[in-house]
Image 1: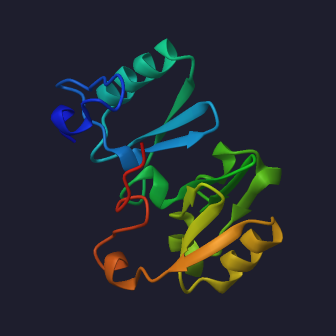
Image 2 (image 1 turned 45 degrees about the horizontal axis):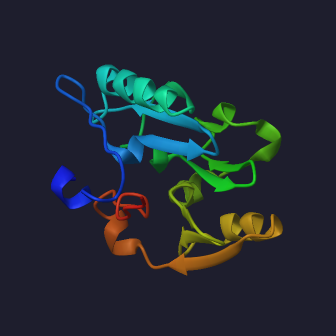
Length: 160
């Protein structure tokens, strides 16, 4: 995103070449950030972001994304210490606080918390039930067309 667009929104920092970083590889869980190394985020970009975050009092850890396009394709933070994840990334979070998805519902990991609501892709009843059991307010969104091109809720959102 252009610095010009963000001007006036507060201080801005950037990742410089040779670093690369894509926002969908960055997962915030309270004051800790998980940074995924993927085809679009490299170790240098992750290192630069870790340095920036530590300057502002945040912690971070780096995770290799072996399968899938981005980190958030496989794990999401629901808030209140709870995660939703494919089995590959479930060890990243506290196991007792992680909804581990069935293979036919992996796409449900790409969800997004906005204020008091959790946006989830429509069509994943087992995941929806598990999330509801934790007491979250859910809004289901039709994502089938975006899914065809590996798009997800976090790919389509810009929060700042």
